[in-house]
Length: 113
Image (cartoon, rainbow, N blue to C red; front, side):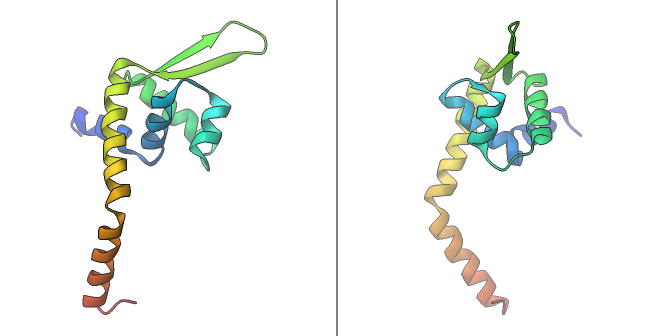
């Protein structure tokens, strides 16, 4: 697989999109981010954050305090990617009526209910 396709897959994955969009607003602690994203398992969120961190999109800041505190934020590269993803998400939201109409027309032409 081409390296850029792998990064594209990470950025546009189900949880990657939501994490990037949430982190545009502000840094989050893990539990806050999990609540903000919603319905993501701890394991999936951890994997998503590690992948985005490895790609240079997310910064993990572990504070040496008790109890441990870890904050996640976007790097400059991550902010750039997140803005692109948010633009696509906004477009999708704005065009959902047209998509739904197209789906209904397609289903009707195929005899689906």
